[in-house]
Image (tube, rainbow, N blue to C red):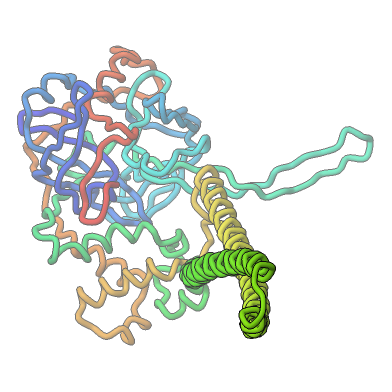
Length: 515
């Protein structure tokens, strides 16, 4: 962040600035949101995603202005083998410059540093590659410093560099093994262009409304999601159809993830249905247990009633025998007849009791069998739940494996540079192209990559940078130690004035998310 008489300016990665309406900075450990007033990007953006440098003018604030230094010490002419490192110790990464690319201001043809310029004597330093330790997602816009303390560039991307790893044995017969392994390459925007901002930067309008500008600004941001093959000079004159034949869209990974998500959803629904069926069976079993308990109580009551009747019958018989001993004559004959009728009633009662006992025994056996079936249903439901739990565990392990693979990719850098484009990214670009041109998708097949990229980036209407604005920079020669050393404390003061909690230089609130 820089302070001038014209206001406060923030230098960051272009893809973080496009469409941004506000930035969040830390002042004395407290986050503060500041509105973006103007956005300026490099006039050559986007050329293969390079250069990726932008300057934003934000609303003025006296407290922020007070903590900023009067000038920033910026290295000029950073070249091969110079060491650059991040300033934030919490997210440290570094590397040495392995390649510097320049472009003719007139011809706008990119070439590697050290080559001879054709048709123009004025060359613009476009972007650099650093070979070293990779950064992480969210580091775009992070300032990089040199060992001398000068600010040397702004990080804007990372990708792997495939090189051969050689190993040999210690025996007399030398065995050489070539193994292709990924090494991270950091893409860095040099700060030379900040010396003359009016010659290198152009003004682009701020997004006016979410509904109107969101798809178009998002399309420009997503151009950087396309693989490097989309921007190679030998491919720019190819048609979309020819390019897609050479580099088919990648849909397998997306489809496989969707299929796994569908299978997981189907398993979740099946598990829900199993739980519902198990709950119904549990309720039915509970109702049967309650009915069996009621029958058991009835059986117990009937047994008690039979025992009571038997006891009463035995007592009546004992009393009758006692009376028989006391009776004589006619009364004895009548008593014997009464005893005969009573004996018949007892036989019928005993027969009825035996039937009731057998019926009760049958009901008890039926309840026992029903309880065994209920237990079997519960066991089957429990086994089904265990199987479903194992399936969910397998899904969880697969998701963890995918996250580990993604983390490995993050540590190594982005996928291979010769990869094919992703289907959903290309589809979003096609929709933006249709919105800008009002043409049918069938006409897109004959459009060249150069025209396609130009149409998408045409939404960024470019206007001249104010010629009266000078950024407060002190340019030092990168080949020598600066006359005014920038100490670590000085750099920490500069960075802490606008670093946010997650280590990014700033947080640009775009339409979709925080970059």
